[in-house]
Image (tube, rainbow, N blue to C red; front, top):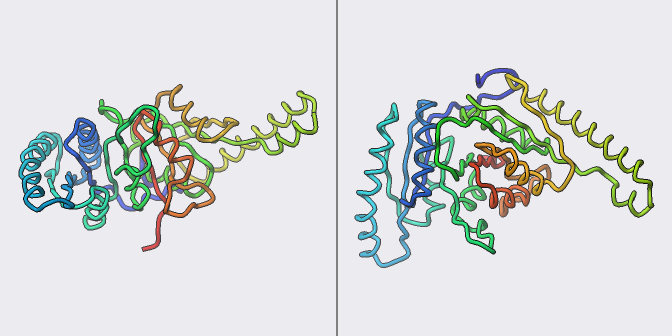
Length: 299
């Protein structure tokens, strides 16, 4: 896929990637995906491990000594498949702050992280390193949930037809994540006035006709959104009525894409203190990889 076709803004080519690691197996999957993306783009890769500095100094130094050989071993393995040297870095401080600081200093175009820890009966996505990097940063974050087996082949992009959704798609194109993939765009809509129709005891046939009209309008709006993007090919387009987060999660479960693309703020542009509610709920639940693209903040 060419980055410069039509209205898809190529922006800055992918030159630098920051990948965070806690030296766990989850992080190993993320590092291997980061290496694949870097190799395909000819980009440099910085692998960062953060040591908590809120502890006695001798403990901090001991953790640095223990982490250093493991990190060097991981980097050496990644470097075998990369055209550029893979750079290791150990920072002190909160992991999410260290990752954002490194990405800013290094001017990285992408941050790659392993999945958050999952526990039954409780959603702990809020407050994790992944969520905090997404919430406080302004760079795309690739959350890797699966062991990589090559380039992404099927990508599902959830869109509310806002500029934030368009930005997420442009980022996926610019980062090369769609180069070898089949792309499906999913737009979830809620037919207006259904509650009022139910209260008015409108015949079922009239309600169904109203829902069909709403679906046609949503499909036309999605087609216009796609045309304005100027993608170099025509993606599959789906419109589904329902609650956005629920429908997106069901679509991921049923179609099993390799990658989900989603903006982290909807048309209302929520404050950066929180992720958009749809994005937060979806990202906490999906098992495929996910590219979360935040709104661009003024510099």
